[in-house]
Image (cartoon, rainbow, N blue to C red; front, side, top):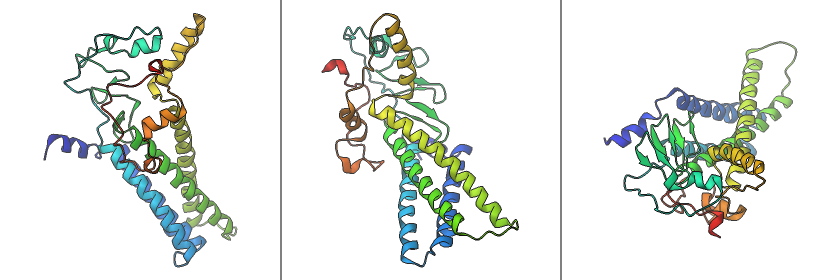
Length: 280
């Protein structure tokens, strides 16, 4: 088996990744075979419809998660050569991102715009957002769409699960005695609520980054650049922010129908060059 394939399989052999798989299985089982069965019965048309809808969302969540884990985030190609000119931009953030002023001492090579060195992967990653422990991989140029679609389906699945759980809980006659079933319901409710709140918050955050064509690293760099600009009496704008529509198309693709599909990344280029607002 090729070394790259072994490395990809090896990413699954981590406690956080296995924990995600276990949580998926737990939420799926409890939602379908406990709460939905308790609420409307899986033998009914309504119960089967709910089970199919949740199963589809869970399946897409699983596919996008696996894709995020096995897809290389995008590493700087060995043939990459920086441009001679940096464009003469006055924007401090764009100067910082210019290929001529960006050299990685650890990799002993030039970094393309928006690339950063990952201390965990020990390589420079194209359009690096962050290193995610839960997928045991960097989130970068090649797997960012897969990652955000994973969060999207995860948030939907957890929200769906919470609604089913909450409705089933309200309709159940508990009585005054404590029982193992009460413990199970409390455990499931706590896990689903915590997961849902975390995932919805994470989804909102990455949607904010998406509509501004910004990475997590660039957000923090941009805060400092904005502070420096204000200090100098200047205004600051993220150099890669091309406007709402163009930003979404660049990251998710021009076809709206393929946005929910994590593997539809045919629109992606090489990740070494990006249009800027200065090009317009």
